[in-house]
Length: 295
Image (cartoon, rainbow, N blue to C red; front, side, top):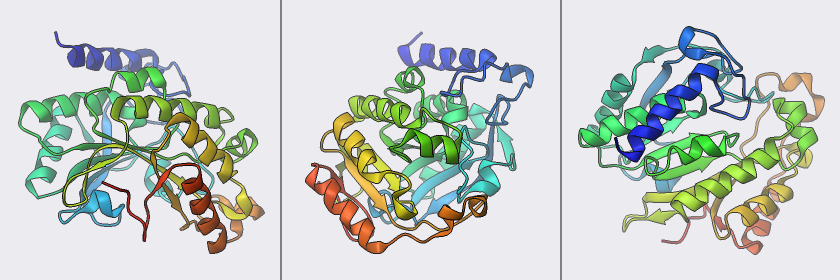
């Protein structure tokens, strides 16, 4: 049995007393028990297809082949995908069915297969990648996650994922607890980013400017610096020196944001620019609407 086969088997075993993610619910999802992610042992796909709204280095000419999963290990008050992250809606797919879907996206000309919110079903994703590779999948795999990741789980994905794209939501524990019920988020995310960077290194582009491997961190700026964005930038710079980061300024109040008056404000574009400048001074490469990473 190869190392990747053993890792896939271990990931499936973790689901029987689930500790796939840092929530550590310890429920037997293989027997139908549900933890924080509200998802059983199978993946539930909410939607899939070529997506042209991702970062340009992921989109290329064919689009990013996104596969959106239902469920999430977090419950962020301002979640802009709450219709699928907080509800289980879509079709259940086995690893073989998920591999078939990935291959169809590749055949449609997508630049990559982009697994969106895969943390809670990493066992299915890992097996699907192995099957798809055996059946001829050549394009990169993107692990597009919320940043709240278990390092032991990530280690079992090594060699299967070419591009890690985590969020890094908060630099402050109080805010992480208040808006995502995850006080340990900053420390967990920093450790996860370090592990991802160890595996795949800096973001690498082909001659067309399309990503073929590496780490791309996303950070959504919240109003009035609620996310402690400079602490996020410092954490990323420490965990992954010289990595690529997208400082995103498109926040808008959504989901349960109305329950927190401070989340109803808009983000100041001048603050977003100042944060991008700060990230550059800390040695990070920028990606976003107007700035591309170096090849």
